[in-house]
Image (tube, rainbow, N blue to C red; front, side, top):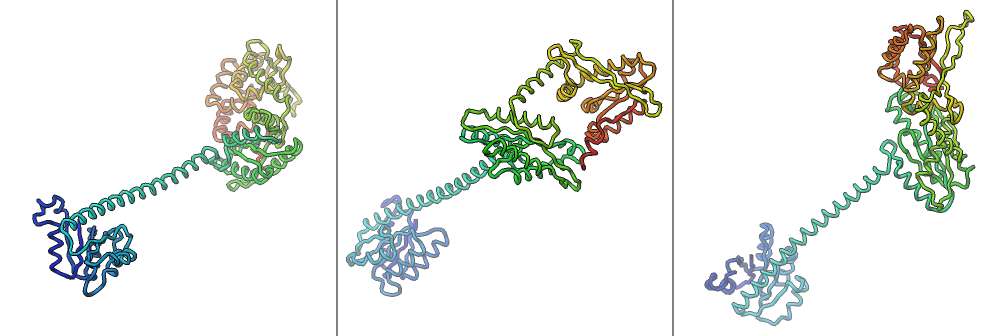
Length: 506
């Protein structure tokens, strides 16, 4: 470690060296070899030596300063300027006078715990012990400062890391509770908010909203257009919903809205305003699309132990009722809807047993030619007469079958029995309705052609009746399918024209 001697008497420098290093350094003090002494005669030289040592990153640990230097800077100014350069150096003031001047030096070159005093003439052992103690202290302080600086850096790094983790956590929470397409709250966030409302006091409305004919937009204009429509409708709902409402995208084209309300009438009016706001012509990727939505509403009083999942289920039942009732409308949940859904489930389970129980039958509606006024064919219509509930309307059980895989079993039964009856007619054709799900099956052409072959019926005597929606679900593939059927000789009829794609822009 480095020691600086500042004294204007050259002969004294040798006294310092002998005292610090000893006459025989290795024998006198095992630590003497660790000392490196630099001696200067003026304050200016001392300051220059300190500057050079700092530049070389080899600073002095201790500076021994003669109190009474005859020329140049006095000891106070020398110590002050050195302290400005090196805040860690220890000063030892060496003087034959008393210590009265030390206070002034400590004031300008402190702190006081780094300013010491040795009487002159000094005792070699005392000087050596002082040098050893202060260099060790300097080394200890240096090591502590290094550790402290490292800790400060680590703390700073940890603070940065903590901030990053907090930001990541915030982003993760946001991603977990918000929809990636619209940035609106998602189903999880909606359920949490709904759970909080069910525990709090006061009336609130839960609304399920579903876009009308959204699949048609997706299939005809593409999924990017569908995404754009979802974002636009979400923004419309945000603007048209009551103040303080939570608007969430629950998935697909379904939205949820949660808001406080005074009563059911007020909530229904709010629903109708949102539906009206959605029922406008929108520009999506250069195409004009007529927006539309249906809504289901349930009004609940909080603090009564309502189950959030059940509240959503009831609102969803009301939504389904609105969609079955004609769309672009809102329905308020009532208990009869619960009974209706239970009945629909019983119908679905009963459909599976209908064939085995011989409950299905066909009736045939004549098709009359406008030119000849003669019956040229018949449309096969399915009927279901249950033992438990009596006749069930096709308008009820066919949508249920369409929602499940039962539509294929029913379709097979209808086609097989219609062709069997057709063989008994003199020459007319039979028209059979096929659902979109049946028509979209990849083997539909082979299925129909094999059915007529087995029945021994010419393809020209079977009219395949499909809905417009079935065609435009996949127009290119539908064209290929219809072309193949026509080439085989089958008749083709389009049912419900004007209710699907052709009404999209109306």
